Image (cartoon, rainbow, N blue to C red):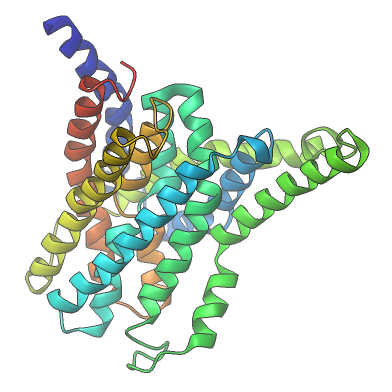
Length: 343
């Protein structure tokens, strides 16, 4: 029994600790003056506008076919996100009377750092099979998360900071979101590949074969996404939460690291036991990534651009990342002990 627990601890540490160490490295480099404000600002923009969309495009493009999409897991993830969105909105209204803070609190409940931290975590916990499931889930989860985030950040205030909501502005923000564009491009490639096979019986044009130079560049961008984003995130760490934001920080952090995993993963376990949802050792790491990872780094960028409380959004990125280091570790250990994740 002791040997099994040691293996569980060893696997969980090797999955979670590299992410925390990369963030710590970014913080350390900032303290040493090697990362300046301008670098961090530009790094954030580079990750959000170019690297993340490229990574999502490649991940979805690499799905072998539409037939490999596990629709039960995809639909379950989408429903879980919508439930957390509703929980977040209600919590935000109860927690704070400040309109600029309500959207930030609401998005923290459902907006996980799925692309940057979640997908590498899924791969570390479940290997290539779990990484493939995580990529499939991202094809629906990432655009849905961003659509819900735009709604959450827009529903309490308008672009001028007033209480008047513009539906047109919400729709434009959804269309302009780089992550949604990256997912849309990946899905387009996937559908075109499927259409070629159905029409001609074979793939006539392939991004990875006929435009290999472009595919190589996209893979280069994908490869630097996670390390660059984690280092930039660490460089932005500021352990100086404003006293006036204490209540919102505590409530939103608990929603992200406790409520979301209980709802998302607890529901999956319940439905699995009822034989409603087929969820095994390749699927649970993807669900840990979706419901257990901290709030997305891009949430603070979007909050700033959409005239919400930038300071609260930045603090939530910091504190949910710190807290999730412990909760994801404990969650991973628990799932391994239950045989739901391979040791």
